Picture 1: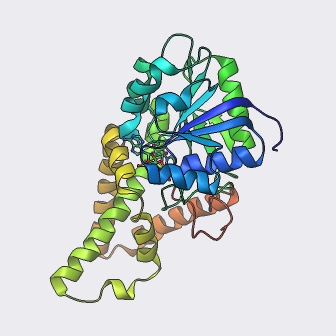
Picture 2 (picture 1 turned 120 degrees about the vertical axis):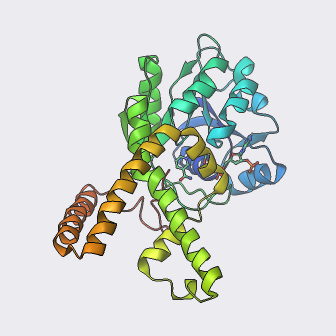
Picture 3 (picture 1 turned 90 degrees about the horizontal axis):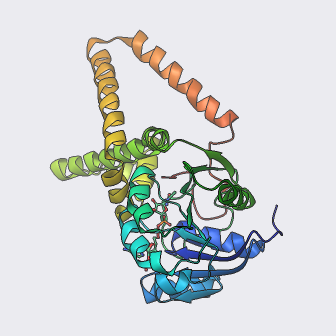
Length: 309
Ligand code: NAP
């Protein structure tokens, strides 16, 4: 597990949920000689130091990446290009740049053009998260028993191996995937479900306005879960949908077709169709439980887990 140092100096750009969880675990297990961090606001940098997410903070991303052999971009997907442009000229030769963005094709297109020759780019996406965000939200067990997907394309194999070792040391199972396959897979398992949760909460809120009734007060199981997912960070999720547009629209198209089929079954009283459908979906849930993926991690006192992006 921990112990062995994998990088001399890791720079984390952005100090929210994901970077904070990485920093706490890297420091706890001695996976790097030093962890340096940067966030754009002073308040975030102060909290990061107070919580010990990193060993030191820098006021600019350029300063933070100097001399780092691993740089991980942990900002919202829409901010990746700007950050990459800033750090490009300051990266150490032979360094690895990675990211944790929830979308891979758009991030590669945003980041790769800014990286100099001799710097290795290994994009990554940990499938772990909660509805909380910011420098107060991270915890070192976040990635335990979760997948971390890499989309290395033709990246240097040694750089890929080293990053794989880091994510394994953070507690994750690591797998390499084709970029577009990644984007479609997360559209169906994470992005579209989030949009549906946002929509359902919006519908209930609308109904409340129209009826002036107490819909939300009587919040029951299914809806309560939707409201938790719909509490996820608005900036991050705006960027996910704007940057995984094609795959999300493809999945939402299929979703709408299925929804119409179920709607019709209800209208026509086709109980057999509904029963068969729900039997099939129940089996999928059992499969997820058997694969140990029903919760992101045990509840470490920070509320329910598993709303990864
Ligand atoms: P977060 O908690 O909201 O933290 C975002 C961090 O990025 C903050 O430190 C923020 O700094 C900084 N930041 C925001 N906009 C910036 C900009 N324009 N320039 C520079 N820094 C900026 O976010 P997170 O949940 O850790 O997500 C980070 C990345 O991980 C995203 O790309 C997301 O898609 C991906 N991801 C998230 C999850 C999840 O479930 N949360 C799961 C997997 C992957 P300030 O506080 O100073 O503004």
